Length: 424
Image (cartoon, rainbow, N blue to C red; front, side, top):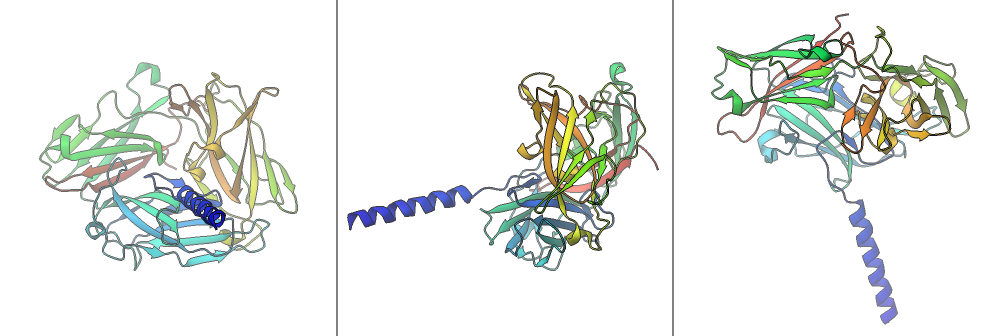
């Protein structure tokens, strides 16, 4: 009897440990928590792959979707949480920022059709009849299993703006002589008709390049305060490396080789796509190539429905370069993986061939990408070491203006603007 009790106790402990290991906490970032989840997309419905910004109390909607490679149908729930300008919890009650239910199930899903890789495609639109924000600001969309937020699946940042101010942006050459031909400096002004008593404490402006959170610069002090206008043009701020045009490849077809595709190897259970070897372009001259500033588009030429008839393939990346220092790593990034530096986007160095290799499973479509260097000693990220940096490079820049009213408990997003350095 004692042995049986002991076995039950060990079983109980094992179950508790397993449960504890499966319970995780959401972080306030664009993140996928489960390896079978792929192709997360979030954008304003008015333009595919746009920055996920919608106007408060308007007809605008966000389109959010993802694939589950395990297939079948699961009970996925979602909610949204209001955040500060620097992506921390605003610690508000849901009653403060929601005029709807606190959470809801994702009921829109479809099974893949005619693909080697079976998957289920999930989607939803926000706002909807169940989930609707009632104040402006930064928001985190949380997707989780079985109504349990201890089982996170996806966290996705998005923005709800109430356009109270107008933001004017200009892009000029860097004020630093050494960076004149490589950097792009962003000057902007916030034009307002509201009474901002203390802009140094109550107002923040965040500038970002190509929607990449890693590039975000926070401005807390305007250079000049003028009647109904705050000017941000200090000489040494908002100075971004222009980088280079993104590299790209085309896998809309898995029968015929698209742009930058060297080989397509089909097997019964998978498809492997080998891209042409990439070279280090840091010392090359600027080349005026047309890119999508890091975006990706799900497309297929063999089927009718891009969402459910696009197959998956294992994409092999090759970078012909050597490590700058022993304590550093190379990653391949783009909006397709939210510019995330994680094990799946990390490349491995082959010392015998003096090249980096990586493999990522991606859905059929058109992709922009670039190679990033992470210095593990300093923790600093360099986007120019293998790509180069040129003032002529076409980039988009986003400016977000946040305002915290005196006595208020949260920051409002009162203005948003975007500029493309290349007007096509």
